[in-house]
Image (tube, rainbow, N blue to C red; front, side, top):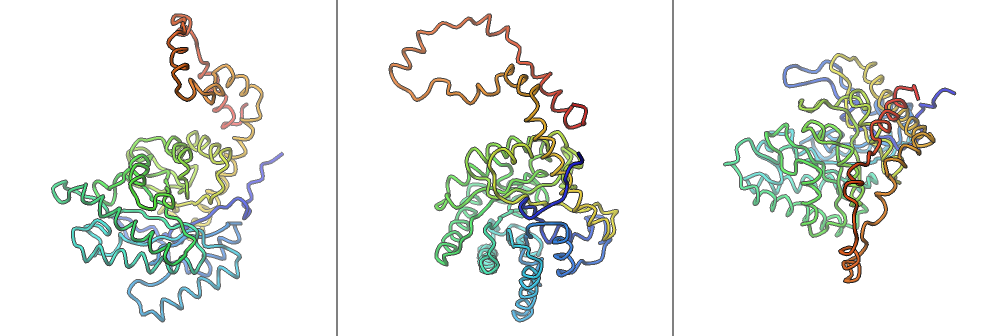
Length: 388
């Protein structure tokens, strides 16, 4: 039976306006595609079965334009959402494009820039609340340095935390039903970005006044470009109940931020990622933060969007097949996968400690054990290749 690779709203696939709206501009060349206007963009996504869309403030409303013009742009967006049935799934602030942010936004050395950045975020939080966006993402693309002499990182992190604490207070004061999600990234466009990885961001959240309303928006490309396992990062984020949103794309290790079509490169890694999301009880959106190759025209943009969806659904189907394979169950039992879920010693008591100290371990026998990971991993590959 052929796989059903048709997206439906219940899959909760979402795209950002800047993804299908990407015109192929890069540091070495101008745009190669015409601007895709809001109405055909949203209509096209709705036709693909997409659940919702996300936006930066400046994607939807012209930066610096009179309020009447910005209001008209917002009203058109709202009207088209209503007509297409799409929801606004996430919002964020562009705190990286304008030259004012060249030294940072929340962590700029200039306090006036910092105040403006917080004000800009407040204004867009109002818009996000009006549109019903449940999640607000903070990507600190300019929060970093090229030279360590330019900032004391400890001071920068204090200003970062101050801004997020203030904005959380604003959300609470306004009774907005919005949670924050931090998006880590190691580098680019800054040489070194503050909060470079999932681990850094999780530790940072623990210092915030309103840490319960702040989680993560990890992105495939951002962990992968630094050689880390995105699967492991997402697993820890889930373990700490901090996966508020997720950005799906693809990336080659050690390259610039490529934002390739999801599933176009690291297929085995994505198999485990999709299996994790499908089996963990994660109920949030699956947000494709990627864009078409610069070689593509407008038709190629829609090929890219369909490809993201098809690859996710195909990998989800492969993960179900894998989990239902009795050979996999047998190999996992041999490897002891389920045993890792069992407590090792339980909570500490004096009696438990004395009992452990009195145990005898046959070290030589334990050292002889094989875990059968070669056979187990080959079953993964067999299922992905369709030769199981």
